Length: 184
Image: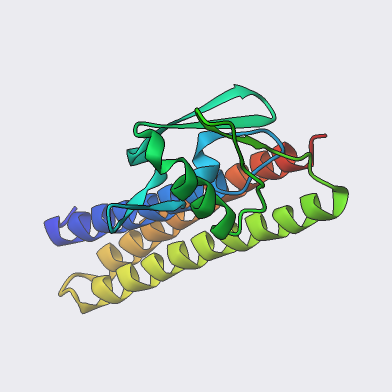
C-alpha cells in the first residue's frame, strides 16, 4: 500500500477515534439516576479571582448512589462552591453543613428520562456526523493523490469500512447509555 494512502487512513482513524472519545465524555455528563462525580465536571468556582474547576479546589465523593459530597480543601470556599453549583443549571440543590457541601441527586421522572435519552441520541448523531465528515475529508485527500484507480478504489473501500466500524461503535455506546438512563 502506498505510504500516502496509509497516512490518510491512519489520520482518518485518529479523527474517528476522537469522535468516539468526545461522545463518551459528552455522555458521562448526562446523568442516569445515580450520583457520579463527573456530574460536577463543568462547575467552575471563583477561586481568588479566577474561575477554577470544582475538582481542583475540592474532593468530590459519592457516599451512596443518590448523594454527592464536595469537601473543599479550604473551608472559606464552602459558600463559593454552593453558589457555583446552584448557578451551573444542573438542577441540584446543595446543602452546606459547615464541613462540606452535600447534594442529594433526585430520582429521575419518566419525562426527564425521555429528555435525557433524546439528548444522548443527539450527541450520538453529532458523533456520526463527525465520523462521516472524516470519511469525506479522507476521500477528498485520496482523490487528490496521484495513484492508480485500483488503489484509489481499494482505499475508498477501506475508508468506508472504518466509517461503518465507528458508526457501529456509536450505536453500541448509545444503546448502553439509553439502557442506563431508562433503568429505574
